[in-house]
Length: 141
Image (cartoon, rainbow, N blue to C red; front, side, top):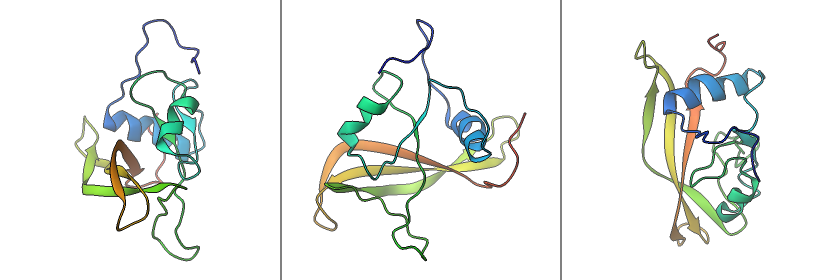
């Protein structure tokens, strides 16, 4: 799908911009620049289906997705799809605000595995999941 962006536009946000600008505004129900990020249920789609719903044409895609809970009363995140699951790898990385060096969020790296845990087969699909450190604070103007 082609976005309504000017010729030559390249969407290449830093981790801090993704958290402090886009994610914070989305959580606060403020308007986010159209044509850049779309809302997708990552648990209802397989990774190879994501390029079809992305608004930007590139090798990287950016989406908003709400976390799905594995159990209604629990805190564990459901990262399963019909054919596989997203598995966290490594440790979470801190996202800092550039000017003040204060922590604004976290970045988690996930790899897609076909099948079911613990016998899944690792694929080349990688996703970076960002979350706000303090989601209830108001966004910067």
